[in-house]
Length: 89
Image 1 (cartoon, rainbow, N blue to C red):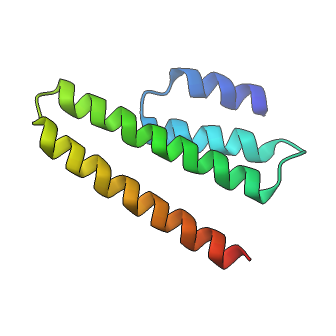
Image 2: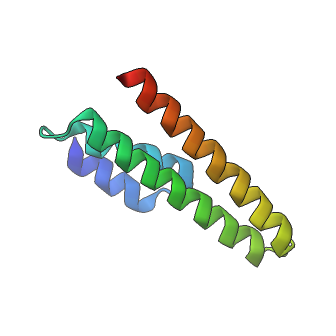
């Protein structure tokens, strides 16, 4: 199953679906704990915010607007991660 998911991860172009597949691959391994999975999920989502910002700038969106959108998404991600960590304890 892991090999098939990895092959599919290589051909999928949707970043959200790639992040989901990557998370499934990480969680399907035997020696993973919840904190590690949460940290990896946080990093993948932060990377997606970065990629989305780069694509927005390259498509012609003004830089101050992109910075503001990325800042808002980053703050939301941090708050969401804090809530998830707090509810897990």
